[in-house]
Image (cartoon, rainbow, N blue to C red; front, side, top):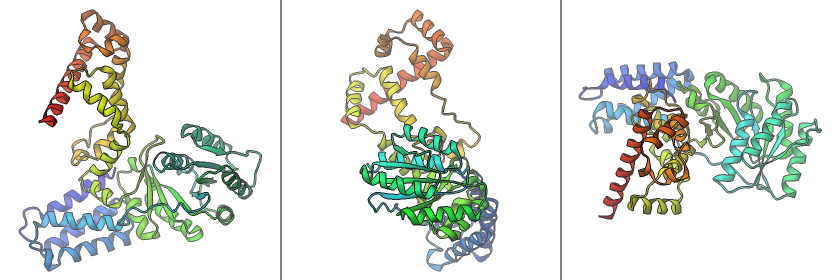
Length: 432
């Protein structure tokens, strides 16, 4: 995420490395380089200029010249200005209404239908809301079927009414049904086009007027860069939406859309899509994103993801087993499942300070755990519960059954043993 921009900004800060103080000359060179980095990241030119002007103005302020070393000072100022550029603070959704109506808008292929389902999953699992989805894209039959399938995946009711061809009436009928059955939130998925046209704009404006949404969200593909920003501006001019969902941010190495949208459109980014899974939707925190852009990681988001998967009762049970040296393969596979639920491995590693740079050219696959899962899956229930029973013949059978070699199996068993010992030591240290 934003790898190209991160590398360019790091090079910019090196201009000040070793300098005793900030001067007009060295700050001008650094700011010029930062502006180049932003333009290369496909940031809007006017936005990049305003941003670097503010950085320069703050860096040359007399009160901060002697506070820290110039390079550190520039990182701090750039971080604060990046966060401000992207909105400063996370912006909550407005969920007023009975039910609250969320209208989804965007071009075809932006991920609108998928993110309608992701949003339903987020509201149900994180906010405890009862959500209904309405399939109001009457032009693309696959969109209705797609929403039906995704709705099943996230356990959300989907209003289909496939025989109804008027999207405005369909949205009204869905709202009526949501009220009748006591749903807290209705998410209306609308039709997209390959390009903005008058018919599309008139139609979605009519739907908005009919259902009076408390929240209108514009869904846009971050990888289209300034095209995403321009499209957002055109939609906002006609629709006056409330916020943006930026999709495919996990594959965006430049970051131009994320950095430009707020200043150009003056509407907040509320959510970011960070993967294909239904739980790969995060609230957008500008300060945390600035951390990641500058290679500082995002430990707060990492902890939040871990807490979301934390089961206190299970943790106590596991703690007792570790203390008694009874940690087994069933426990191990359970821990792997919790880690996998937290998101893609590359995204998780990117949240650890410095790891984005360290793993720049390393491909981290989400299938990394599959060989381990295959080996444990090839064990009998008795073997999984009793790691110490694995003799030569058992190992040979497990290796053959999992399609791995004896060497690979022995390597995993050694790692498992070391992990169990480490967890036992941590438990003992906590008790002292």
